Image (cartoon, rainbow, N blue to C red; front, side, top):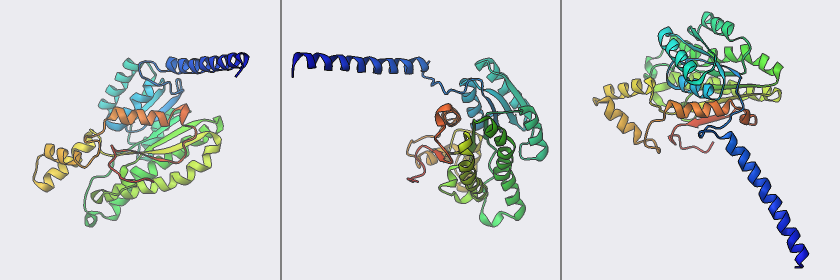
Length: 294
């Protein structure tokens, strides 16, 4: 190789290296305190059932990303406390609406306060565990209202304006039981599977308008729901709740319960500007509990 050609190659390599360095420098600028810029600062988000637990984890993660929030829960005291905490910690605008999102009246209150929103996080507490022979028609109707028909109603109310503006994100908090049904959670299995089927079709119909709808499937997390489930196991097996938790952790490859903060971070990413090519997916957040490739 001639000296001239060698010099030219070195120069090209130097230019390429400099470009790569500039790219990484830009990424480093976006990463402040290990927080990724999700590109949704100033967006407006509705987060249902967000006074505590996984809903609150999602609300805090969105607030950290710079979103203004409309929070909802049935209990006014806990909701107001969460709203004030988020206002002080993250400096975003927060509207708190105490209402039962599973009723027509409750949804109307939330939607009136919400106005035009960019992000919707559907969430509602799951039905209680039980046995197949205990559930009557009324139990199934109540489960369907809370965990299938309510999120569908919110989607129908808010997604059209998202489509008109060409951008929107919807995350439905469902359950790992959608992929791996849990025997004692038959009510939840049924209702959330119905929502999953609805989202599978709807998400693909609206994606071309810049609106992305996905489902986030929690396994067991350190929330009040886990306390209730462990309490049920403890009562059935004649053990302590702590022992029930220890036993359950042994069935999770990660060896522990998830946290609301971890869950919220995944939710916020699915709501982010970077999630525009994720459509109609069921994202597990379960510590490896469901052993499935699809």
